Length: 95
Image (tube, rainbow, N blue to C red; front, side):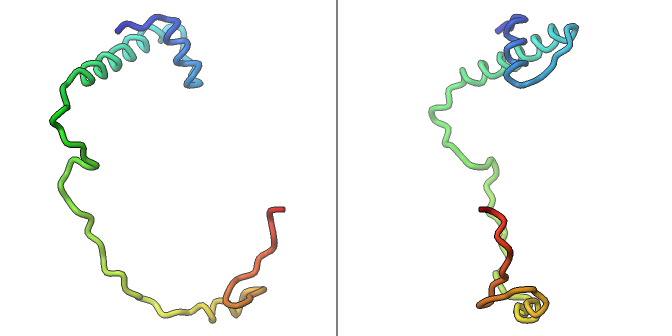
């Protein structure tokens, strides 16, 4: 696929890019190569390929969910300006 100058100008405007006048032919060539590659990949038969979320067969190693620190909420709330029922009270900022 070969892009024209008007195509490059339209793409640049949509992407909010400023392309220098002397760079337009190179940008057109690079974009054309990208679109050719996409067309080539699109032509591959993928009917028997099973979709996957990740190319590697692995599982996430998770640590045990255990408490490692003691509850110090009461200690922290002693220095708070306003507390009610274990919650910090803050000024309303959205009306």
